[in-house]
Image 1: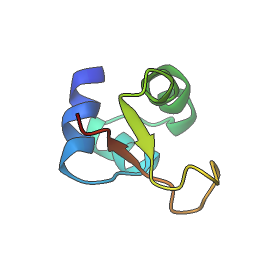
Image 2: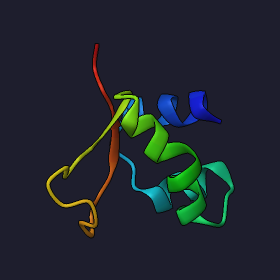
Image 3: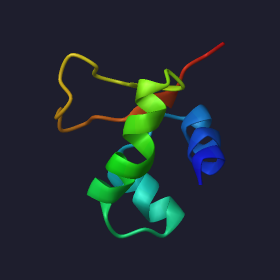
Image 4: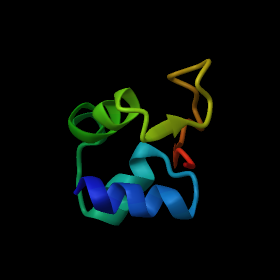
Length: 65
């Protein structure tokens, strides 16, 4: 699941809801807690609006190497 999220976020910034739709998941809170937050903490993903975590258009992108 982690690799799929990273592959998708490499293509374009995606919101948690968009990721849920693409991954066939229903609960965006669980997706954030289980996958997105750990990937952010590891520095693999970054938020499009890091200054406002609850930004209405918050999306996640892959950190370039």
